[in-house]
Every structure is written in structure tokens, then in C-alpha cells.
Image (cartoon, rainbow, N blue to C red; front, side, top):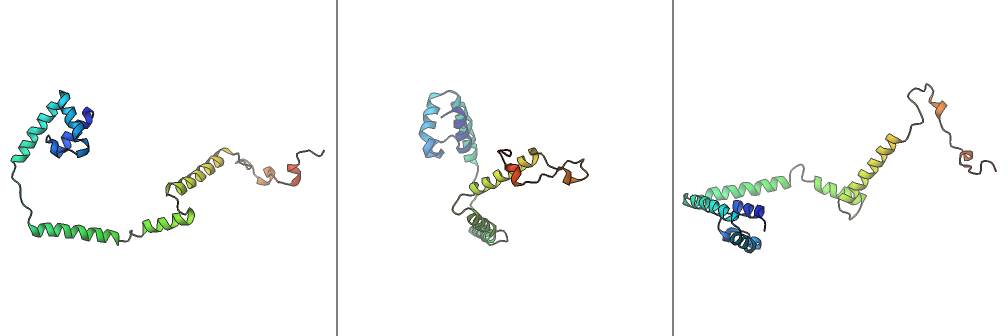
Length: 154
């Protein structure tokens, strides 16, 4: 436990250790007992907790509670059946057609690598046709079997 994490716990959950996450509670309590700096943070959080506890609470009417839950369910259903709902499934089928069973990053990185290689080759490999040439056939390289003759006629 470090001071930053302890301060984050106290800010998020308050001064009462029973509200802290169970996985970090023991470490936070030990840290609070050993250091002097967290005690001031705990005192500030305790004052805020007391002020919040003094505020009255209001019960949510059952009809409002039901309307909120119904609106949420309707939003989830609308989102699942909306016009963009089929896009993830279509992308999954496309990915499986290109690279079956692979996670999405593998075909995406293969395509990106191919694009990068093509861009580098396009930028750095000199063109056979110069911008100042009037007739591109003057600088045209014709590949014939004699071009690949490494013995040079011997």
C-alpha cells in the first residue's frame, strides 16, 4: 500500500474501513496504523462521512423505480436490435473469412504491415519514369532472359 493508493481508497470509499474493498482492507488498515500522513486524510474523510450521514435520505417511489428499470431494459433492447447491432457480427464473420479462429489484432496487424511495406517501397524505390521525361518509353526497362544472364555471355 502506498500513500497515493490509500488516498484514492479514502476518497472513493470514505473513512470507514468496512466500506473499503475486501482485497485491500487489511493492507490499508495496516498502512493507516503505521503512517502519520494517512491519519490526516482519514480525519478529513471522517468529517465528510459524518456530514453526509447527517443528510436526510429519501425513499424512491416504487413507480419511479419501476419506470427507471423499464427504461433501462428498453434501451438495452433497442441497442441490441438497432441498425448498428449487426456490425460486430459482420466484422466477426469477415475476420473469420480472412483469418479463421484468430483474434482480431492478428489479421489487422498483417494488413497494417502490408500497407506499411507498400508505402515504404512506393516512397523509397526510385521510379523508372522521371517527371521530366517526355517519352516514358525512353527509360522503360524491358526484362528479357539476357538481363538475368549472370555469366555475361561466358
